Image 1 (cartoon, rainbow, N blue to C red):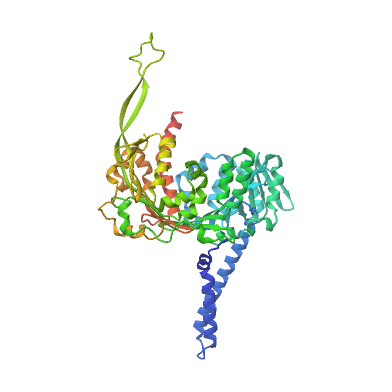
Image 2 (cartoon, rainbow, N blue to C red):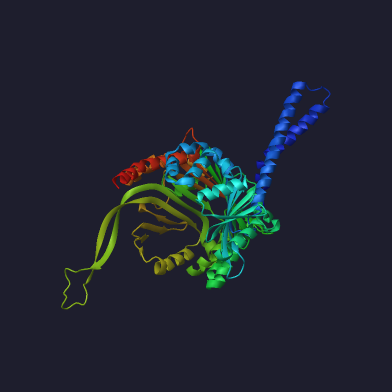
Length: 581
């Protein structure tokens, strides 16, 4: 396993500054010239603040460790939500003024409505700890063919008795709550139980026959059996994130193997074998004022050579080559320089079906590929229809009506695109095309110098020369264009072995907005938020940025306002129907 210590060091900058400040104080103390009393007070106060900040950081980490202790070490998927961070970024204290939450409170009857209102006004009084993380996990309970899936939600608790009251009010007295040794349990549903004390709560999903017993066992599991002992997970946990997702490849592999034994599916074994060198993958999401940042990293098992597992090459596609991938500055693109020699073994099951080996794949393709999206426009689509001719059916001489074919012409909003693969060996590529022509793509039609793929939903044209295989929405996009890209976008497109871009400004798609009709007004509050998406990928890591339009409000609150606007626009219809009834 390879851990990214650079990210850890970056995120421990507070500790670094504390050390630097301490050295500065020591240096100042030992200087021949004495410090002034004012300077001593300033430096002492600063050190005190930083020490308290470090203490609070340590305490929060320790509290989160109590939550992580309830997550099994072999959990297949684990998600984290930083409630404290999200609450500040979403202006949670303003939600109670939104119409949809006012209506929810009014629609809830009795104690449930009162409790909901109190939680919005004073969240601390509910017993939940909204200043800690919430973790969601799914795991395979056991390792044999009869093993069952179980999951859970782990959260912080401020006061166990307050939480008991909240749960009792929400369920309007239906929850059967028991207490033993200051630990509370409640069966919420046939397959859902809840366990909590004064620090931690667990909502457990499992086998109804032993629900409470299993929930308590998970709540009280030993530290050595928890995710605290999963190094890759704890590395992921140390990264800054409002939301994060951790996928345990090893556990998923064991699960697919048990399924393959149960159902006799060899493909599942092939799938798990292809990921045998990968330990896990993690993704973090951070919400900024005008940006949403997503970062992903793949963790390798200890001892695996990272160089032979890189998914991309070292360099991106050059700016000079971009004209091969799009005839003009595109509205979106995906460009890759893939390390095919590393990826081919993962694709072995699919390659076997196509009748080629992984070596033939790497010999046939260069690894460079791109998908460019130029927009959408209304295009003529001709569909060949085969139907019975009832008008010319001679019922006396024919058992059934004769079949006739005719062309049905329609106009649809379709994407304008170009897909290009760099190739090195036409022979293997032609072998794959012939396979597709005979089996998987019945609509593949050979024409004068190119192929036509007459898919009714998305017709396209295909051509190949000594350097590339191209699939385009219009024949005019074959080959290299003389047009140049926008300089800023061209620089970004060639900045990494893998790049992604999509223009999200709805004004760039007037035909599509017109086609949306009334739906455009309903979607407008959401559409006005987004500017574009940009992403890069190199090796085992990827970075994406969703860029938003300028606003004084944080993105999460903007999203909530958009949802509230949609709710308000639909609410009068509900009120009118209620009056009519």
